[in-house]
Length: 258
Ligand code: G3P
Ligand code: CA
Image 1 (cartoon, rainbow, N blue to C red):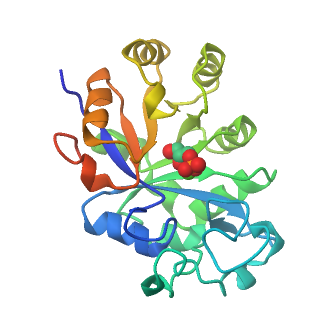
Image 2: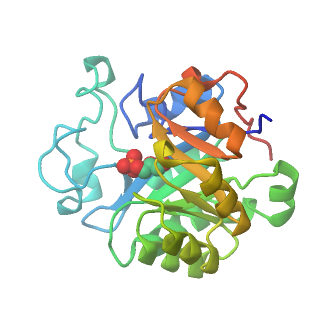
């Protein structure tokens, strides 16, 4: 039986626009994909910025570590030309910019990427001042059947800090490898969803996750539509992909509802 699966635009619509930029997130929304995923790390002066790598070199014209530069310095960098010169105006977004731009328009999957002790706290401050926490009330979640905000990480300590600060927000554990130990840890520590590499997902694993009250998501990126449809039949809830349109058939692109 086919089950519902939400296609999430991984780092935005990253197959057609530079990852983790406003251009990529806007494109996802323009195509009707209201779940967007992105990565957050702190600048030298403690501002949550949206970039995947620790180093600037792959996706900007900067050099060195992101946390070696202040917000003002990072904002000078070109974050789009590496992908295509027509995106040369793109800058590294701050988390606050995204929170303001997509409030009531998108469901955010925020990955706590770096290891700083203050990262979770700075993210919570940004969510608070931008009104995202107030908006994510229980009644709204019940009405829309899904949270408007999800926080994820591969790093358990970051999730522990975040869950302590935001016990009512859904959290996702990302894993490189499926293990019983990490599933048990997730289940016992307030994690709502468990996300391995899509290629490792089997019906038995999904059944075990469901036994532990965990949803399952797949980081999946460039897989074929038929692969996504296959894991959807197992009851997988999310697939994080670079080209959401390639996975559209029979899957849902959940409209944002408030
Ligand atoms: O969906 C999970 C995925 O975002 C984790 O991998 O390396 O793209 O951040 P990465
Ligand atoms: Ca990510």
